[in-house]
Image (cartoon, rainbow over all chains, first blue to last red):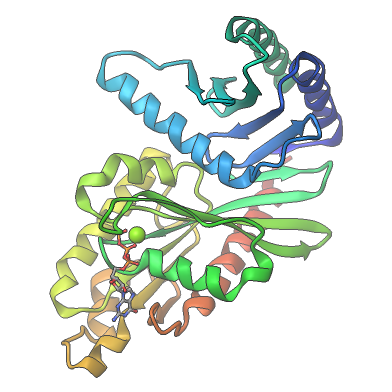
Length: 128
Length: 204
Ligand SMILES: Nc1nc2c(ncn2[C@@H]2O[C@H](COP(=O)(O)OP(=O)(O)OP(=O)(O)O)[C@@H](O)[C@H]2O)c(=O)[nH]1
Ligand SMILES: [Mg+2]
């Protein structure tokens, strides 16, 4: 997959405006092979992006297999709660996943709303 | 499926070490991790069982530096070799750009190697990839066992079993001693990058 300057800039804008602007610490767009497509953070977050992407893609893949075993097509979102930091994954399309790291100052409901908007915008962007 | 970022000029490609249980895939990555620290800006991720068997994968990104103006990052993975972990093995293969098949030279592992390379072929098929087309290098590992008086398969037998039809590059190696570990890596990176370049030229 190849993405050019314009598309990547637009992706960055969408992620910044909707997610970082809403208080998410770090957001990453990855593909299901574990490659990092785009990543933005609020400047205070230092995570090992590539390792996180590899694990997130694998985790999502494992969850999809589990979904099939219990007779679901997929679990479209995954949420892992920690004491301070949480991770939220969601699927953009067959190839791409969004991974958010956020703390307890943001409610999950609010984030879900933002995420569905972001997914919609990304799908549109990537279809171009 | 490699990813090419034209904005920051980064290429990410995925190389997977495949092979039967205990053939030495993790040992290959550990050696590379140890010897090439300058090219790895990440911890090695290992998802394993208590007994040190790979449960899901080992992983780290390997920085090749600039190639024709692009920052090339190779994502190195191992699969779990044990037969029962086929579903996780498949997941790791997703989006693979190049494969190192690590065979165990120990004589009593002969059948395990053959079963594993067939399994690789089948799992690649699930992603519409053909084992004959994907960049592939075979490594005959554990050649050092001969020194300990353990019976090993001669290279002719191994080639006949695994590489008669494929005819891909192959190397004798010892992952514990580090023999030809880096050579194997260099060869698969070279072949993977050449193949990507070819694919790019074909795209409109
Ligand atoms: N003598 C010898 N032993 C080796 C060599 N490479 C690996 N081993 C040993 O073989 C055993 C298994 O090695 P691993 O690297 O964990 O094997 P693996 O392929 O990752 O196994 P799984 O994770 O179960 O698929 C370990 O005890 C290694 O020390 C080698 O070149 N020579
Ligand atoms: Mg292993």
